[in-house]
Length: 402
Image (cartoon, rainbow, N blue to C red; front, side, top):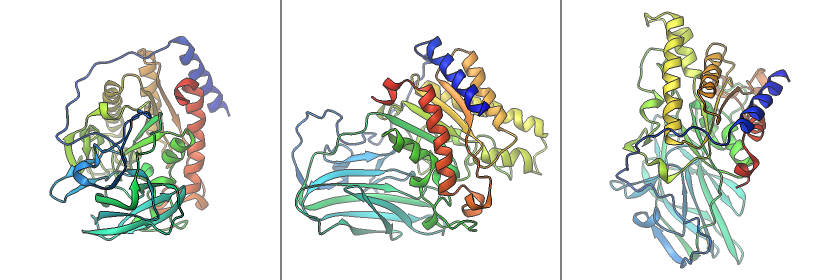
């Protein structure tokens, strides 16, 4: 209760002490592949219906929306949507909608899983690995207009996904109007939904028990009726892994299309209003448990401070007007959360009135432990409630209701 009261006072004070944050410059590079995410936000634009859309036209088509950092993979002849919660959406008249898609099992933990929403009703679709195949997204529908949205449940660390063609027995119409408010989430296995839909106490990762759509991040975005981009991957950190390696440093990939495509991402193609950074759980393992690194624990914490500050600084340069929330604690971390909170506090003292930090609900009893001790869907919902409350307190209503 005291923590929530203090956070409310901090947010209230910052909101009324200044009207905008300090804008920090920065150069963005243009990617080789298209960063266009689909239909225009101009609702008055006339768009002709089509029978089918092929991959070469998808990212510029006004008949389909894409979500996530998507790109054309010419060698496979498809548009990839690799990150968690990435995908596409369209509307059509007819009874049946079919797509040619590709899935890949990257690490032997199972196939790619998607959620297919047909007029709001969800079904789970499993993609066979390493082959393109036609999948019926829906059939036997009644007359009228139908909306279909496809989102990737599983993460890039273990799976990939792509689409090469989509067609209907009727007409594919102008894509639905996009949501105005935009979120972007940077995170690790927690944000990916590792084990979020597993049996309680499950051991050993399987893609069938992971869903980014059952996470604090997705629940939060849905609460505010917002679009969301996930830049997340199991094992990511800003310092080193538990065994001292640096290959999973998010700072090396946050500005790329993905870990699978290292072309520079064009941040102007998706301008986030709210950025949430949930990184540090794997750094906590490095700080506390690594036995090969010669640095002391204090030196490791200082190194995390430097690297985490650099990441937040870089994100501020990319999004000078965004509200940034640094969150931590969902695995019960007890070493680095204070550092994360202090980074945000120092940024505030430096004049950035749109940055905030808090600890989220930690799964704290056996009934809330998913696979390998990760949060269950129940724990994610409680963490989402914490984040929703803070965002509501700290972000002006005119932004949240845009």
